[in-house]
Each structure stands twice: as C-alpha cells, then as structure tokens.
Image (cartoon, rainbow, N blue to C red; front, side):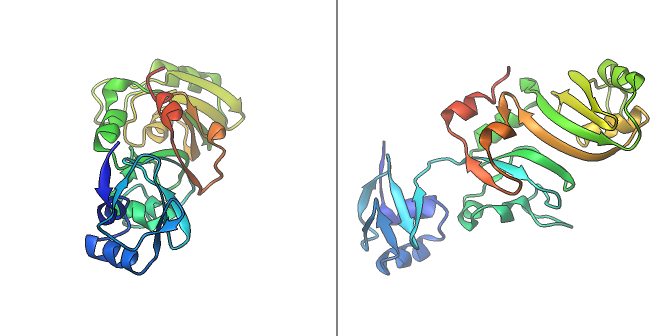
Length: 238
C-alpha cells in the first residue's frame, strides 16, 4: 500500500501532465471513491482506490496488463507507417502511460495481443528463452496436405535462420485450415514457414498464449480487457 498526492496519482494513471492534472482536480472533475476532491495536494491511499474522471470510473492500477482482441488493419507500433496503431483502440491515457504491445502481430493478423506499461513484464514475455507456446489458426491458399503438416512438424529452413524451425504441434482443421503451435516467435514465422513448405498463408489468427485463451476472456474483435493475477499466471510456461 502507498499514499500519494492526488495530482501525482492522476498523472501516474495517464491523465496528462502534472499541471493539467492539477487543473482537472481544481475544476472539480475528479472524484475519489465517489466523492469530489478539489485539493490536488490531498494525500490518498492507492489501495482499492477508484478515481472518477469526467464521470467515468478508473480503478487505480500501478501497472497495466491488458489483452486486446486485435482486428485486421492495425499496426503493433507506437509509430505506425501505413495503418493505425493498435494503441488507438485503447483509452487515450494508456498512451500517456507508454503502454506498448508485447511482441507483434502483423497488420493483417488478428487475435490475442498482450499490452503493458511494465517493462520487466514485456521483456520476460518477449524472451525466446521462456518457450511460451502460442496457438495460431492459419488459412492457406492451397489445400492442406499430410506432407505439408509433416514438413512443418519436422522443421523448415528460413532465410537468415541458422537452423530449421519446427511447429510444436500442427493439426489440419479443414481443407484450407491449420492449427499451428509455435514457441519461437520469429518475425512473420507462420507465414514464412508455410511459404518455405510450398504453401501460402492468406489469413492468420492467434487464439492462445500459454494457457490464456481469447475465448476465456470474452472480448470481441477490437475490444480489450485488464488481466488479473490468475490470468497472468496462465502466461507462464506450460
């Protein structure tokens, strides 16, 4: 538990500069657990704190851990080049908190994307040493064949990779559908592996990271949710 002045708390939650946060408080736009507080120097206990800013409730969170159901057409970058950033799907104050994607999904890839402002968490989740499995559903241009599945399981050689990369599991789900589980997380890995095996990926969706599934979160495409301790625990190696 910790106590901080209200302007510092508001700033830490991404509502703007200290000067702007003080103005919000003095204008009566901020309430603490339902009671308006216009003294920005007021010292407040952060444990269990719920801020109301412009009539919208925001529980205090020292760090943000978020899951997004990413739609097509968004880039996993703070400085996108050709498409809107995934950050535009989140509340504006999350940008002030420097929330960023954990790893990347291509602009045309959909599904489960983790985001956080916790640098240690981002580094740990992105580390190739952790071997956290990720589950993808791939749609292929050409029909799926048994030799294609066998080749992906045995490993395919990608350009600039020192050794062949193999899927942990690979299961045919339809004439043009594969479910692929990977641990490496290389750049464009699913698409490149399918190309190296003689097929082509026309659509890609990530449904699971570790033990955390998109279905269990209940968020529709374009929606996000906070992750609690139990859900974060599912991201550990299985």
